[in-house]
Structure formats: structure tokens, C-alpha cells
Image (cartoon, rainbow, N blue to C red; front, side, top):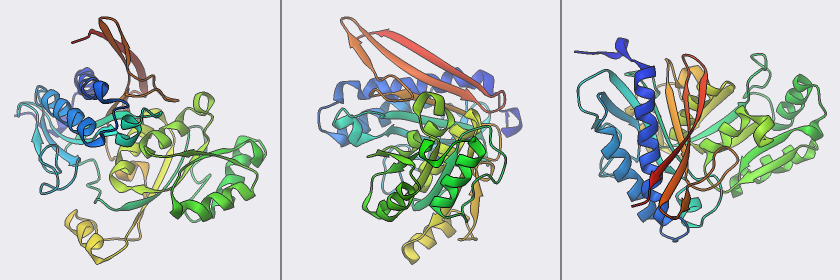
Amino acid sequence: MADAAEFQDRLLSLGLARVSEAAALASASLIGRGDEKAADQAAVNAMRDQLNLLDIKGVVVIGEGERDEAPMLYIGEEVGSGNGPAVDIALDPLEGTTLTAKDMPNALTVIAMAPRGTLLHAPDVYMEKLAIGPGYKPGTVTMTMTPSERVSALAAAKGVSTENITVCVLERPRHEDLIREIRSTGASIRLITDGDVAGVMHCAEPEVTGIDMYMGSGGAPEGVLAAAALKCMGGQFFGKLLFRNEDEKARARNAGIQNFDRVYTRDDLVRGDVIFAATGVTNGSLLAGIKREPGWVTTETLLMRSKTGSVRRMTYRSPAR
């Protein structure tokens, strides 16, 4: 029987792109309809159906929640045909359900696949996140630096003034002090309402997105997905789990986490080769959204492999149903 050592990322990558595309297409008819749950459920159903067509022995390690919270694509669910390599699956069938329901930018479908046991089983708690793009020396920015120190350090490494740095931050009340401190350096901020996987990915292509750095707290599972993307695109990622109560610490223990103060690097979160696919649902800085025209539906997908550093942009045009 095939095992994790036989993870064929090249052969599996196109199948993963189809999984991502199917989820996006399923949610297309619900863009702007105001029904977040229906949009998410459509994406979940389609992603699960497509995953089960792949010749993998997959386990969902980052998914829709614990088994008692999610009937499909729950953490621990086995997916695939059962024939093929043993793999970990991290996914968000619709990253930005609110964005989709309101037809706002940067809604994506996101999925990553890696050999079994190489993706961190992140508990459903918050994670403090810090990310920059490729081309910088290790230690350019660190979690021990203050936000203003990070901006200054990145500006120095880039050879520009702090006024030329743009930081992406999730717009939440908890980030008010963070935003104030970043702006005190003269840096600009791109606020996003949802979708911090896309927010982190923006750092990897600053010449396209205009984003140099990501800071702030968000879901830990999304941190693993973001790290998978940066492992393919290049860039540095740091994450530290945040706990609000003992129940959240218990969740972490159940996921096998003992050191609650650990700062995880990109390669701690994703310990092996990974393939990553994201398909645009609504128009965004990284990907075009679903385009509908008479008789046709078109999607754009980003398909990446960390082993080769390859990044493909794939346009899929299919007959409208």
C-alpha cells in the first residue's frame, strides 16, 4: 500500500486544483445573495465530492470544525478513494463567507495537501501572526519586536522609508492599538474585513498587491493554510497560539500541543512538501473572481508546489449549467 513516502505532488496537483475549482463554482450562484451558510455549504459539498474522487488516503487536519460541529469535512474525517498516498488535508471551502454573501473582494476557496503527519493540527483558537514576503534574511522581523520595530526593520531591509511600507491587518476592535502603533511609524495599512489567508498571501507578491507585511491575530487553522501558501510562494511566517481560557488550552492539548508559548515558523507549521490551490470566488488582488457570461463560467486558480517553487495561474472555462 502507498504511504507518505510516496507523496507524488506533481501528479496530485491538478486534482487538487479541480477540488478548489469545484468549490468555487458551487458557490457562484450564491455570490451577493446574503446567505453565508448556503454559500459555505455549497462549497463544502462540492469540495468533499471532488476530494473523494482522488486516489489518496486523506485525513482532514484543518477543516470545518470538530466532528460534533461539522457534518462534513470535519477534523479527522477520512477523504479520498483510500487507494494512494497517506496525506494530510488542510482546507477552507469558502474563505470569506461574508465576502461572498455581500459580493465583496477576495473571497477564495483554499486547500493544501501534504504527506501524512507534516501539517500542524492547529486547534480552533486564535493565533498571533506575522508574515513578510520572499527575499529577506532570516530574523529580519521577529515576534519579539514591537509592531513599530517590525515596520522599521522591514523598511531598512527593503532600503526604503517607513512611509513606503504597507501592512495588511484584519479590521477588528482587538487590533485598534496595533493599527495606531503601525500608523505612528508613517506606514500605511490595508484593512481587510475577512479572509486572512488571502491577507497573508498578499505579502508574497508585493509588486502585485502592494502589501509588504501582515500583522495581527486570527484563526490558528487559517495560519496553517497561510503558511502552506507561503511555503510555495516564498516568504516568512511566524505564529503564536493565543488562549482566552482553559477550555481553549484543553483543545490544544487534545491536538498534541504542550508548549503554549512556542513561536511557530512557516516550516514548523508545514514540515514537508506541500501543494496548495486557491480559486477566486469574488474579484481580488490575487485572483479574479468567477466570471459568468452567456453559456459559460470562468474561474482563475493559483496552483503551487513547494518542492519546485512553481506557481501556476490556471483559467478554467466550463459550460454553464
